[in-house]
Image (tube, rainbow, N blue to C red):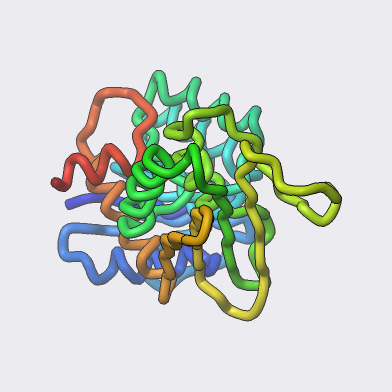
Length: 254
């Protein structure tokens, strides 16, 4: 039985993770963490990880970047692997994650959807084939409550393309402030916020007289929660420290 801890358990995504875990026969939620410490009928909730002394095999985090420090300290102290599904980390926080991953297993992804991570592979292949002659733009759309922009997934897609391009790409986020024609080596990244859009990501390769568009749409938050649980199962019993990603999980599945 996989004993799961949920950080951000009373948030939008935390509640979906809890529901996915309840439906799984091989999973037990042993505790949740929430800044307000609100109660939950199914498992105990603590305002901070340091307050919890019970069992746990893997911690899944869908909270905020502000919770990272306490989660890393908890993982180190208890030798519990972490699934970090939160986005919007600073450069310093990402460096800290990499450092801690040398001591415990950490799974981090800008997007926990299996479909999105297949898209990442397709974008990389398209960039390798078309990058010298096609302009590339990334457009992401999310609900009006999302704080960070661009999304972690948009950056993940841009980074995947940049790895395969025959030149060093430069990201352009606010084209209205540039006031000049598009440069050849740009990757444009645009953000849309509105309504209850769960998550749309579109990658456009625009060439001379032809356009190729690769797109992924999430219909519900369950795709991210399901992917996070897949990641927790991937880390369960894994003793080797390291920073793992969806590419490792997809490779493990196939």
